[in-house]
Image (cartoon, rainbow, N blue to C red; front, side):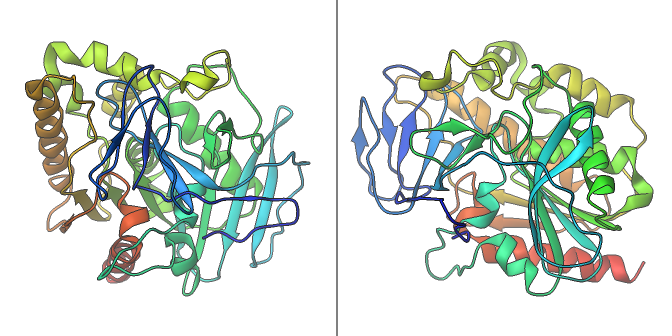
Length: 355
């Protein structure tokens, strides 16, 4: 679990076990307990994962520590642990957490709608082991995670992060890459970087590597979104994309909830320079996405097939890319098998050192 600072209150709910539907009337499904509850969450220690409407693949991990108002400061230039907001210009700030020492620096990019919290949480069941990815990596490396604007904190009740300045929505992958590049410069976080991207965060780190190849030594894709998914889903993609953008029911009135123009972002990736010659690893899950029971089986299977096929294309980005299958994990591999993610990062660091 992440460290609690003064004023934070832990939310005692378990990640991955309990799912609460974002769409009205959709049931919460428990993979491990094998039970279903409608009209509200089933609670158990530590955290919960929020899953969206119909074919929402990017589960929203919600739990951990309570958010509290922050005052922007400047990150120190010297190595050392840092947690707080960093000014990035134009009156904006982004929350950044950096721990550990060493080079290269590992940068953790969360999935759609997720704050940085999942990287500081572990729900590892034997034989997998904790601690959380950020904590594990900080033992031997400098590692940083940050909150994109409009993402969800692990609070009860569910809330959008107040640790990073809100911005107009929707955004694109270029906007995310620009923010991250500016943040790392403003916070004096030295490269080269090992980029680790979960889910839609995989698209963001891919574009970062294509845009700033001189700064990137390696990339790890954690059950990442592949650029081929829209074409593989065919006519089902527009409705699915719309479902992905929907906020949780309790946040439907907010305009600051993270929304990404995925189609425009895919065009940006296609127009960018080729993926650089860097060490790469791909992690994928074996457990299916949690799909409401009223969704036709052929629809859910089409999603699973598209995700698998797109992951295979990620493996093909670079020769001899290891494809690591996280047996027993769902979409949040970094929470259920943090040791596997940490090991993949160690592998690409080792391989990149020989280049």
